[in-house]
Length: 115
Image (cartoon, rainbow, N blue to C red; front, top):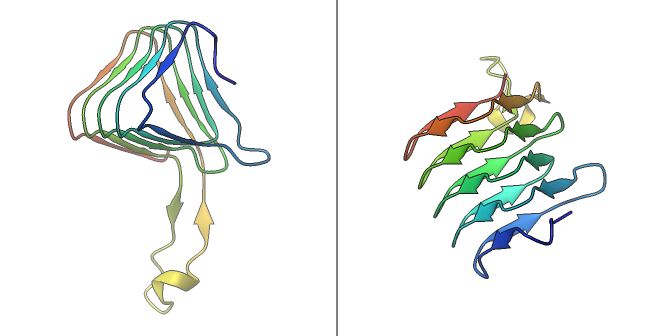
């Protein structure tokens, strides 16, 4: 769901699947080459800058109003197991989710992991 007053650059990619909704709030901005994969909820006046990546996993990412996510930042709301006796592709995935508050700045190239 895109608020009519938001901006999404033509080269940004937004992927929503059944049960993994993407919501972009009023006056929010998604810049060129950003990637947003639901479940993701962006508040009002949020900016997702060039090349940032948000992957909501099953539990989702919630970003509070007035938050800034800088160029190249990565947010992944899922993870996989690391049991030594199993191959990576056989590891179970889990998703706790990420909640970013109001008026937060996530710096360039930062990584925010699940939980």
